[in-house]
Length: 592
Image 1 (cartoon, helix red, strand yellow):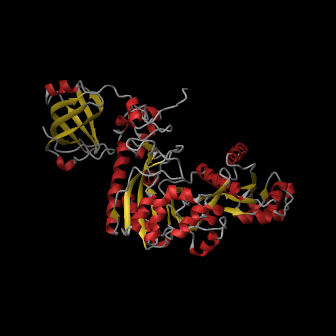
Image 2 (spheres, rainbow, N blue to C red):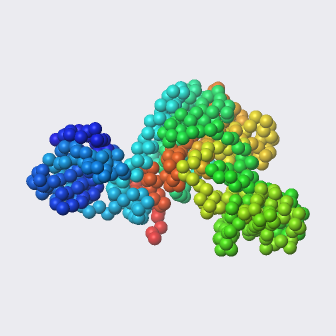
Image 3 (cartoon, rainbow, N blue to C red):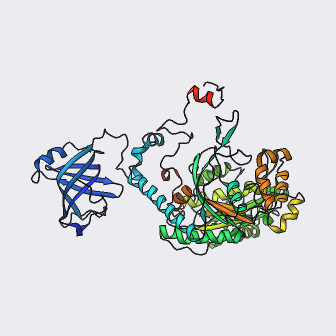
């Protein structure tokens, strides 16, 4: 027998055909002596029927079938009787009456319920990853991987159409400072020396621009040794690109077209013009540099009103150069005391020392437990400043600008979750631009690059930066945000060698450190570097966010768990002593 069709292919128009199918037994049911089997492959499911009246010998073999047996069948396609169709299956109008059956492989009772839908998946993550090859049989995970594959195909086609060359960059490269920790690889032939796995192809793609390649792209594997979250993995994939002789708007326009021609085509949605929001505005109005625009809950600064009230928390905060931010939670006037207390605890995780609430009653009257510290005019002014209307609950947070923005931004998201405003079927893109060039690290006690040290300042801030004013310097950097998730980011790069060396100095790197870590890179710029800029999209994050999922794990065939390990093949693992000797490594590991 040879397979003639897949398990998602047959339709009513195929009635009467003799067909052969291969796949896994998804479900088996014995109804009055007639055995029904849902046969599954990656394309779908087909119900096949073993009737003893048709072939008693085949029926006897079918009686031994169990879930996940691999079988091959041949039989006749027949229409299902009226009223017996299964609308949940694409093949639900037909059955295949079986004449021949071959059991290609038996299966033990699987430890995972493979035929359960996603919402009924109850196994813990480590069990799923231990038997990942079984987990991958689940149709909803296969759908994720096929969707990602489709995106990759359309991505290649898009960049080819737009004159980009696909060029591979090294996976074994030099370890450099800044960013997350590197994964390092010992060299056998160079004792005591190590490669690093790339956190991104950043320096190589800039060197390709110096090499005159003009437009580069790559589906690049990247590695970062950092604490893991739902949207992070130790190894991940970037859609990486770089362009020569461009300004910031040119790179962003290219990605606007990518969203319209690739993402909108695959997910079938309309893309209006993608708004561009300055970093400062995003932090004020949304409390985040990755604003979720699916709902209209803007944050307002009410510091000018708060400065003149008798409420000590507000007044002293503004007097000490802090801020007071407020938000009107639409239709939340019925929030209970417990809900308010829970929200107060919630924002406390983000540094807020308290949460002031006010209700807007019928007639626009403002009610609050701290009313005695405010005049009626001041309460009305706060209501109007945040856009509060009858039926709204208003919340206010006082603190440093950084704490107030972050805590209020998280409160905004939590209110949206409570009210069910995060519709996964809605997709709202935004560009965030105008990032600070540098940010001060309290841990390091120095300025650090907000993006990376190869980012160029805006032209009008170049002299400011060269003069040492790092706190007010704005970068030519841009992030693409979707539904509150940063799915990609990039910048226009520094192409002047003197400016690049100056940035390294401003970041505290000595001449020796620059030469040791970036010597080859800085030297290349002395031989005619074009203006250039680029961007990288997180492939797995793009697909997960487009699908309305927080975790990228189910969009990666063989992901790691939160300990950066794989329960399936037990990696990372110890290696043979001979391998350590060959790579000139001795271990000094404290035993637990």
